[in-house]
Image (cartoon, rainbow, N blue to C red; front, side, top):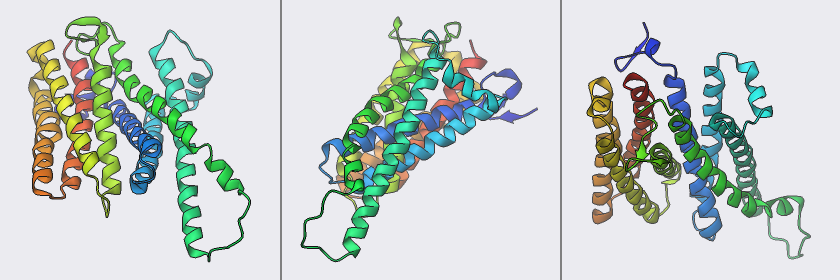
Amino acid sequence: MDVIWGVSHNEVAWGQLIAIYLFLAGVAGGALLTTSLTDLFSKNQYPKVIRSGAYIAVVSIMLGLGLLVLDLGRPLSFWKLLLNVNMGSVMSIGVFIVSGFTALSVVYAYLIWSSAAAQKNMQMTSANTEVAAPSVGQRVQAIRKPVAALGVLFSLATATYTGFLLSDVTTNNFWNTGLFGIDAIPFLPILFLVSATSAGLAATLIGAFRGTDLTAYKKIDMVLIIIEIVLISILYLSVKPIFFSGSMGALFWLGVVSVGLIVPLLLSIYGIMKHKNVILPVCGMVVLGGLSLRYFVVYTGQLFR
């Protein structure tokens, strides 16, 4: 029997591959959201953040899709999901959203890479006093801002969809929990959106922390952590205590609450007050907390109904 954290894989239909896929899709959405908004509004003040987020987004979503295809058991049949979009199926709509997100993330990562390569070549080449006509590369870069704007929309849709995928299972009392008991407002999409944004931002900062003042981003991440703590508290008060018992309870209190939220928040406050660079430990724990949350939600929803 294959057991992870005290959970038998025979007891669940969606296992660790789905949990990791949801996590990676969330990180990808949060990373692309971070880099797209930075690219649109920062006036090129944070080039490292833009590059880091763009590359993390495309790598994360590719890895996540690979796990999703592997989990299907019949990977060669995945293409059928792309051609048969059922607007009444959350999973089918999700495949369409994630496919669009993947295409955008690839295009955007290429634009960021080509822009960085062009700037490097310009620095290595002596300046030419003659004004040159716009190159093909420059004309291609003209679509970068529109792609970033679309990236914001698809990032939000991708991060939210991962929650809708679970909450659409109406027979599952845990996954189908409504915000403040209001069934018309599913809770998981809101929680997953905030968690994905926080984890994606944290992953982006890990890749961009050297030689860059990231104080503004650290403050944003603190706000996201606080919002997530509030949402987690609402979840705890909205469902039965049994959902937080056993091995999944240990994962929740240690992985999600302590490592993923409380400790990073305290370290962030300390870092800002003392002007200390605590990006790596804080962001590393936030990312780990995001993974723990997906594991907790996916497994708990199937073990206790």
